[in-house]
Length: 173
Image (cartoon, rainbow, N blue to C red; front, side):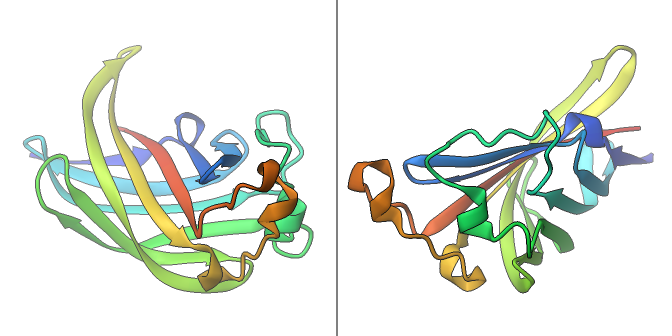
């Protein structure tokens, strides 16, 4: 029997980090997460994920964790406040190894990226069935024009060339 699970925004979040620095933690209560997963007999058939992150959000659940990295300098949040991802394909290797390919947009630049998707499992919480994924990927900063003068920060330690994106996504029936 095939079951379609929908993404639960309030239980999903994204962490954006670079070597030596966490840039931002973006909670699902103030950002838009959308998508679905089809599961048949506990096997993933296909999946689609879409999220839109407002990095200029002033609500309390948005946290700029590392004060050394200013989001304004890095992302130009006044001009380009939204980071978005829309999957275009899903490839299942096994239960724990899957890949999402899709369009990532940062600072109005869209590039195709591939993200690893680990299927965490199925669980019941407060009487509701849930499935969870952790999606990870390294994004090349220069592909999106994310330049940053790293030697003014972090005691001269060079920041990484990649941004690590880690999304914890929870789906429910």
